[in-house]
Image 1 (tube, rainbow, N blue to C red):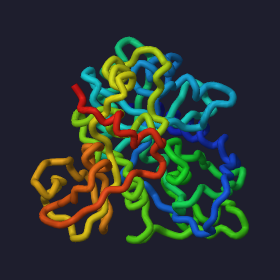
Image 2: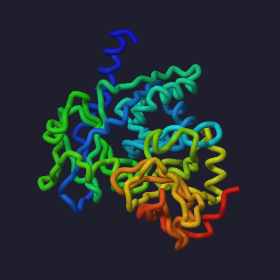
Image 3: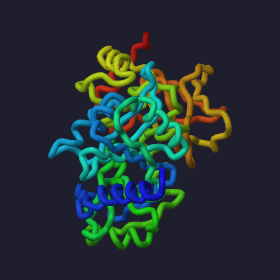
Length: 344
């Protein structure tokens, strides 16, 4: 991309986001201290073109057309699958003031592969796909209780959107790359009794996700290793069963209608430091799943649901006890034993 074209592209990207300054996210909170953290592991990709909606609609699990509705959401969680219906990449899609432009958040380590995947399916569509990593950075604001009441100065180039998965995951803030935490904190107009603080080892976004059992990125959601419903896409508002066809849709729909999902990502707690052995076993030695991410005494693991949640057997990791809790955000029917039959 030449310099002139690149300058125009960055200017358009900034204009698309700027107009969202001043929007508010205002659920109630029971705690007045919020953690503000830059998401260094996440990157923003700009997808632009007159056919951008049908292009993305044929690739992701969610219904992108909802983002263009007047009362539609400002962001949407979705997954990209391979032809066999297995998960490749997780994303949050942000709408902009330009109906032909969307911003896709992805794992920084998978950015190149992710863009290559998009371009593979572009075919003859006039779709521009570029990173805006040097322009905008995603941040998260959370307190583990709610999202707070957040406003910004009208002149600020900020885009604020609630995390589209579950409320406890807080609020996403897309901010210019040259802004630091101190300046961003000052520029965020929160409720008068709300305090924004930097992340700590005891309060950070990764630990928040692990306590909820939510995987993110290629390390925790390895490409081609699990199905979208095993990654809880149905519980995290990440899949539409009413939209048209998309890559990997057939198997996803079949599994959903059968009601048979043998494994799911869940939060796991450890009683000892985690070594290089990540296989969760029963006392008898049966393999029950694998840990894909951990911090302190918490982690996220893909586990067999029925033996983990509906039995009294002890769980072990490298010879030490570990515990699994049913996520509070799972629907009540998720613990129904009849839904845990083995997958054919």
